[in-house]
Image 1: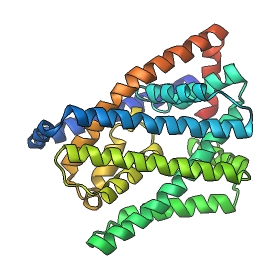
Image 2 (image 1 turned 45 degrees about the vertical axis):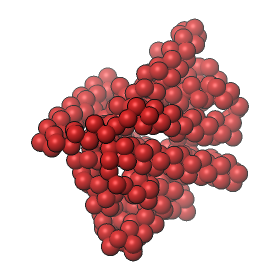
Image 3 (image 1 turned 45 degrees about the horizontal axis):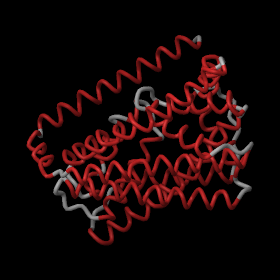
Length: 326
């Protein structure tokens, strides 16, 4: 199958899934339209506070990427790394995984940062984030069982499988000959980890920043659902944020639309919030995040895109990134 046809199939699948997700969520909200009354409890102050907190996680992502790039290749300006992360978030709203392609193209043309090292940086982040989230997820599932007698065996099984899988990859460096997408991705993740695992200080910093990001995300969820007059506890919002991050693994739709909501609604018993309210809250958070996406993200994208166009190589670089990444 040629590259053009594969790209077309991926786009059709991605947008088809997005369309189905939008239709399902619209239907679900309509069937439970009484929950829309919760929006009346929202105050402008709540929206502003959430809008201020949301960019913090994007900034943390930019700092982590800078630390990795500085470690495995060369130093880049913090401002460049932050703008790249905001632009990444902006592009991902329209094209699934498009942000990674854009970041890679920019780093290659502006800093001569090799694709192989870019993939290594992504792989390293995946390993650390998945291990951290899986460990925290297991702890929280056990916590809710002991304190509230609430237990979701499927979520426990998922977290255990992720943790076991990551530990296996750390102990045994597998080599896959298959060119299939899944095995290519797995190889990238493993190579990325082995590239940075010797730098213990870097790993500690990444773990610390990832933890801060998760706590900030939990605070956002806590504020959002409290604003909707839902009596959610902070530990429940902590679990919400932990499982929400799993949607990054299954990045099939722009911004993970529908995937994230499905995972959260499936875990509504542990979160302690009804599935319809979870859906409303998730969509509300997406709507507020658009403030950052189209302001800071849009401006960052325009600035970086102007730099790319000045080099005269942006399109060629982007095509190469797509071939390597996908």
